[in-house]
Length: 305
Image (cartoon, rainbow, N blue to C red; front, side, top):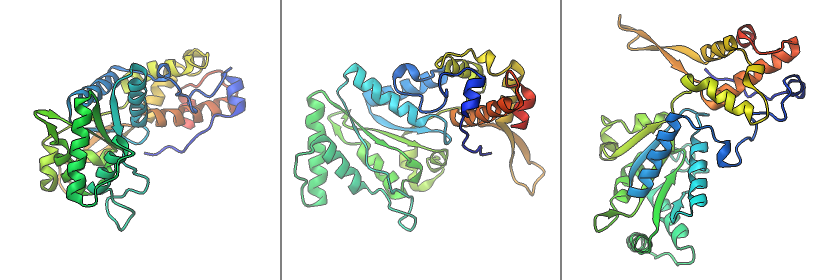
């Protein structure tokens, strides 16, 4: 289920007495980030992998808040003055195969490490020499007190060969200490690609921790209260308790599971109560409530919007 992008109208802002759109370009500092118990767990898992090394995959649906978690992580590094160097290969044109776009190969990761860790150093001419150069630079940085994190976004588009090679990057060590933490950020397809029964990437899958950003069903009221309070409004003045339940229901749908040809087909209830979907659904309902002259968004308006 996809929800079209919605924009809060000026009339709706006036109707609900909002100083600003609570969902538009709203995160500029750490205090702007809504933090639930699930998000705390994800943040701490990311932090521990940064400190101690290893492979971590951060998985979430489109609009689930992955980019916000990563931005918050970088902001924390800056605020706390941590000596952590984040290495981010460009994924601007990345696709899983070269027929669709441009694959991110291990050579590009090596180049990204070199240009990030030692931007003024001349890269060695041969692949073997560059590999040794990377290990030497990471070792020197580690002994000087730095930690290095290889962060790859849109990782569900990584080619299989590069996924396999990540194990080798994770095994770069200074004695017993890993020199490189690896964080992959991607959509749910990444979890499927890292399944332990996928023989092509089993060595990586067996070593990769996976943490997922879940939907906000249980904290939807707290999330909306937080968002609306930031623009000076009580959430109860925008959406009723019944409207909130209807919003939660609207973002939940049934999906068939099992073999359609067998008698074991079952329905699974799936929630899309992620920040982007919540924002679009509530914005549409607020615009409709304004048109109807309704004082708050109720269940009927949510269902009609």
